[in-house]
Length: 339
Image 1 (tube, rainbow, N blue to C red):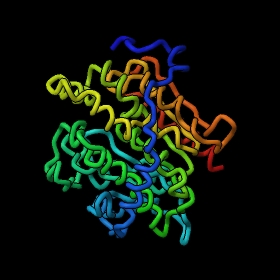
Image 2: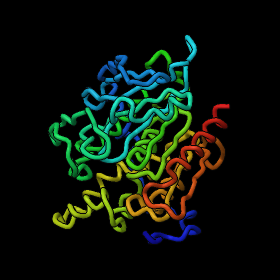
Image 3: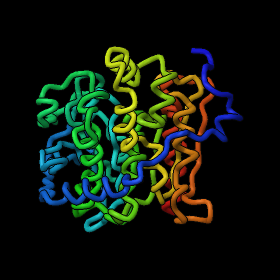
């Protein structure tokens, strides 16, 4: 894939034209309050994972509307008695689910608690999922086309439910006695990276304990530009919808504005390590830089310029990004942060 987006020098100063709705904070205040009206009911059931160095728990907690959301919690088997570990809350890419019991234990291998959130209504591609989306707009069948599900209303839009699930996943992870609730790191690739940005923004002023965000080639950023320039899914699902529903562009963007990572990134107040790939034709680099450049700009958490942040750029990579090379970079980032 050749370079098709802005040159790197322009990316570093690129800002999105997306403007936060006047009631963005109020909308999410009400949404979080509504979600917390349901008991979290986090349960952790030990499960055989066929590994000798990792202990795994099958997790269930209450997400949006009180609906059950699944997950895995992996812990190093050699943890000390009474030791409380920093936890990495891990979100999954588009179409994937939490996977099999021992499919991804990397953060536990590194000595962290590793909490993987299943994504409601997904798991039909990539890794298998176990969480239905029981909302009336969806049914419980996992299939493609999530980007326009409920797009006629901000209250009904699919990602309102998923963002709430992601927020409550942090609370669920904090509920385990072997997890240090004051040391929560958010991590994810693609859609997972988008959920990292959203949760970091939503946590600010609403949830204590989140200390870092690791959005890797994040999806769900700068919707207007992404819809216009992205040649490969999932953003084209929206363009295809609008190609048929020609009169709904403005109303669709009005809804998406409440879920655009660029808007939510502004609220974030914790250190972040982003990544972008310059040949990425799924999450174009300009949409990632739009989020990165906005991140923390609405706070004074770290300095006069907002939250501390860094970005790694992979010039010759497509949506796979930095992969194992970037994971090493993330480990270095967290080691320095946690001391």
